[in-house]
Amino acid sequence: MAGLKDGDDYRDGERFKIPALLQLLCLGVGGGGTLLFFILRFAMPEKAGAMGYSWLFAVIFFLSLAVGGLFWTMLHHASNSGWGTVVRRLMENLASLIPFMLVLGLPLLVSFFGFRDALWEWFPKREKALHHAEEAAKSEMPAYVAERKAAVEKAAAAVEAAKKELAEVTSPSPGHRVHLERKIAELQKKADVLAKEDLSEEGAMATLTDKHFLHEAALLFKKRGYLNETFWWIRQIFYFVVLAGIAFLLRGWSLKQDRDGDPKWFRWMRRWSCGLLLFFATAWTFLVFDWLMGLDYSWFSTMWGVYLFAGAALNSMGFLIILLTLLRKAGYLKNVVTMEHYHLMGKLMHAFVIFWAYIAFSQFFLIWYANITEETKFFLTRNTGFWNTYTIAFLVIGHFFVPFVALLLRSVKKLPHVISLIAGWNLLMHAFDLYWIIIPERGPSLTAESGHVAITIPGAWVFDILAFVSVGGLFGFFLLRQLASASLFPCRDPRLDESLNVVN
Image (cartoon, rainbow, N blue to C red):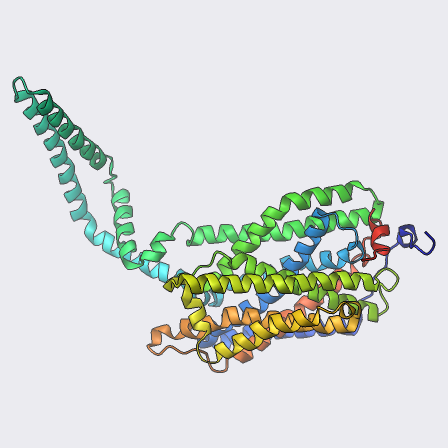
């Protein structure tokens, strides 16, 4: 066993020192860019809608990387994977940025900034439909209550008349008696239903409002249990608590193990990761339902959650590879990370390139095959004009074929700079993927009421770049602080020996 590394030799860990200039640059770019973005927002209120799409694109891109980091952390614990112990702290640090990214997403969720109603049209449409429904209900209510009370009295009178008819028949035949009794029962049932109707002012108002709401916006009425502001905020709180809470919990236990080496933290992380994976999957799935699928509330796809998950997992692994290479170039982790770790991370990235392509094609194929108008509209929008060329060039070829072929070579996965370039390519394609999901909705949504629907908003790409750079700068600033807050690898994890000496 000579030559094997001993985890006890690394029990003090390795600390990262933040380059002051880099930290200042990230803060300056992120903070200054964000300030400029919102100054422009209030200086040009007519551009608020277009800027909302820009901010959503930037936030969801970096949030997906953080969520991917949380997934890899949980997967390593749940599967008891020993090989990744030395890189798991990087995953934890990436996951710990989730609350920061969700906070940056707050301007999208509140109406004050003018983004929410432009992004999620069901908010203003629902409010408008309800307003019209309530106005119509108020004018109709007196006549409606009088009509329904008359119907109740008429139904009760019909029951009494039927009973009297039966009583007046002398010696009815069995068949005649059954007929009359059945008639009485049916009339009584109808009378009971009418009598139970709430004809108070509040009850009648609610009934009439629902009636006119259905007439004004049938789809929003059918989805009213989900698409309403109260439940919307309940879900947003749920996403924050679950995603940020899991990241905080696992990283906290990991840091405690660094301090005291107690194996109970390792057991807790493994057990809780297994149990919390369900909550993680639910939170991320419904977050992308609300934030991305909700851009067109009439469209739906049952594969949407796993499609966005595949992109997050793939590209967070790519980001981790790049981060690891940059740290090693700066002199960190050279004694604990080997080419075997790169090989394993490269294989995972390759696997998720294939998985993402499989899910993307399956979603497209099922929608194309079913040929349902409500589903095909998503792809019809993205097959219009230059978006069709965009789809083929960046998603079909760039997002799948290029990295798939490049990562087939075993030797490539053991060359840090080469595999980092491939990871960078994947990140670029991930940005193009999210851009393709969000931005094609901007033109049609913002110009629909003008009578001339436009595919794009001229000049809006400037806001896209500004938002991306601003959020990216803040993302980098928070990541640097997290990297410096603890050892760069879990230095007292019981699986450290296995990770230090991994061979695959």
